[in-house]
Image 1 (cartoon, one colour):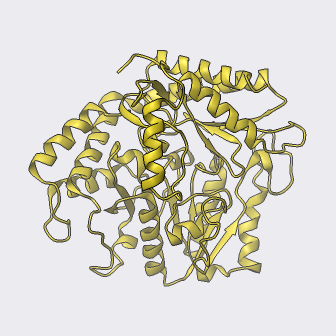
Image 2 (cartoon, rainbow, N blue to C red):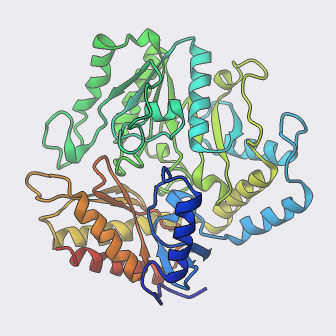
Image 3 (cartoon, rainbow, N blue to C red):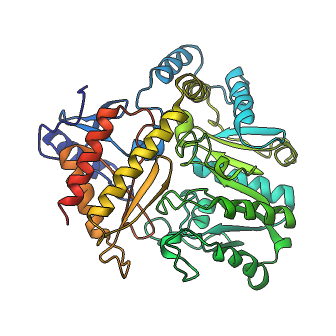
Length: 446
């Protein structure tokens, strides 16, 4: 493994091209391709492909590697547990790791209420189960979600998701009793206001309007929200908005589901993004960086809600697998012992400062810089005045950066944003090199 980005071949290299040919013959074309190279190994914030090219990873496997690739605690936990126990199905023969993980997650999920947890395999599966629980507890059918949201690719999660292409196009009909309201997208205010100084919250009234025109609150089981929209372009929901949402849910007996799949485990400078607003969710969904690279997701909520479901009403064969639970416990240990939240705060300050410098240099097409902590994004437009999304320029930036050894991910309703999901413990030299490559890539398309 090299110490920094280094490109030895053209991208993709010959071995990656050969593997891509095999992929085309073996894997359905319905699975997208974000980058053309194939990984061989990764450590920390560096990823090396099969051709020996090393990249600085600002994508983190889409927000999974907050504690870095191949974290030593996770690796040792996985090795140790794999030698002892690989699978029983928790509901058949139980094991301590599942209980310990539930105890520790219950203790750190925000709010004073007594909590309960159970574990599944992915964020989408956790969303499905959170909605099941909310419907069961309330006896109501409807769920309200937000524009610019992403909650997964299974049928109900996909219905909740607020973007058609590529996630929903051609996959209907969708689940009934799902209603959508505008999100507080300050750069593109749904109320038509100038929110350049920050969201004014006018769009919150759209929920109350929906209660009058679309679905009565007595029919609403849950409102599901990402504190910072992930795939939607890293749009932070203002603290006051989330507090108002909490009050609205309390007023009408609606379950507030907070989706922390991408925002959780230090991504915003706090363990969970909802902590910035000081709000207690009724149900919280966790996944991605929870497992340090292993597939695991959590559904954690107030005990009275979680325990309302009859025995056997919740379950999954692989959920909370002993190896995945061991990995998740190692992730929690890493946060406790390495002060990763403080590192995340410093990382966020540096990344946002670098992005603002780039915006000052290119104000004509860098339309917006936003985020919360190190969960930061830049939105590209053809013209700052019209704010016309520039997906083409965004794609060119990603490719230019890749050729220099920086792995970036896009985001946004229009595919015109770049987001940062690098490990929180990325080295200073790697971070600065990555930011320099990002700056040069943007300069190249000016």
